[in-house]
Image (cartoon, rainbow over all chains, first blue to last red; front, side, top):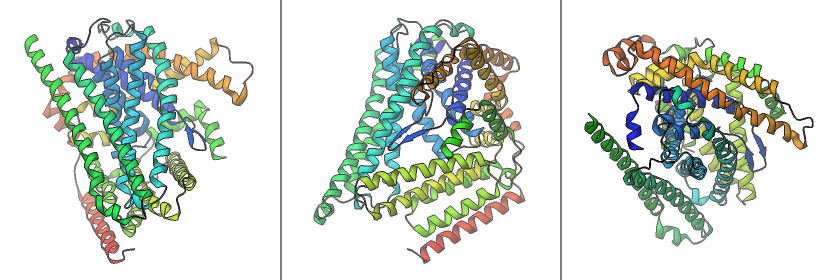
Length: 290
Length: 274
């Protein structure tokens, strides 16, 4: 797979980028205006048509397709609608680009429906996990004495949990996995020649190192998710023991931040390392080919 | 009732199309829209980060009022305000409901209000700053801050291609409907009809993807003929493109008045701490 990525010319990269941007942007215009069904705690809405970036990320170079999709979302879904969220967009941009990029890297054989299915689900799951982590973090950071408010941490967890499950079912399976399984076999080998690109070879396997770094990122995301949630649960426990003031004093507020900041540091380091590593690999390869 | 209204409107494709075009290409000659986009972006960054460094209720309310006034001055489209209101109200009501069921008391609401205020300030500030800003101006500002030129190209491209893409997608859907057969009975909660449309929406992306791929290749090849990739990385081209951005009297006025107002809000917050 590494070799193929380097075969893209400048204009082919641009083509994949524009293709992904236009298509996912269009889809976003559409979903932005769809109604949401809110039944009690369950909010049923199509937040994005995940099958479009998933399909493109698997058929083409994952990086340019993922990047294009995120840019398309910002430009069509927000900027042109006059709904640009500023910093909030950056958060979604990073989460989504990373999730889709990983989904694209996971697939090595486009004839295997199993691989496509796993990659599609993992992709959407990473996006949802990251956004859950950020949401929980926001509440944490934004409320002064979270532990002092009974019921609040539990409520936030319940809300996030429900939204995670519904998002996985609606965006992940109904509008991600199933359409992707329908579209990819139909498009594979048909759409690439239109851009003058060779179809991604079915049997080419990623080199071990690339796999390791992808796995590292997935595990890091997962660990961060677990860490955040479990620490949040810990806040709840302190909350139950609120009539024991010594307990609070014993641990202090800093205690909560320790594991979570450790997780964050590990996570950031892993990502930076993975990016640097793949960059240096690319540069050595291009030097060789030159 | 609002929900029903929104539902009806959403399913009228013509209305959606017109509204989108209106928002994307409407005239944007407002106070904030005329200022240098770089100044606005820095202003936005400061104002949306400030609330996260304080738990002082007076400062938060002051910031909320300040950003709201600026948003009112910039005459934001009703559609956008409507979408924001629905979002905020829904979120708030929902959190309140869950906290209530989980056995929280009034204190829970009080601390939630602080958080909600912070989020509201952020979103109002972004509306005030960006709703009235021409997308191409915004992309110029980003370009001058060092965002890759691809992004600024993508904005211009999207700006021009949006109507064509929308038309094409609509035509494909119409032709699917012409050749297909809608279900005779709508079923419980019209699920058969919904399913029918969902399948069309997804299937329509198959021809759409192929058509867009063809068009993309034409576009990029036409661009390459004009030396597009070269200009993406050329410092000189960038300088020429951004030469129209200038900070003049109006901008200085804006900067000075914002500094004064933000200082007053913070001083007031420390004097009348609640």
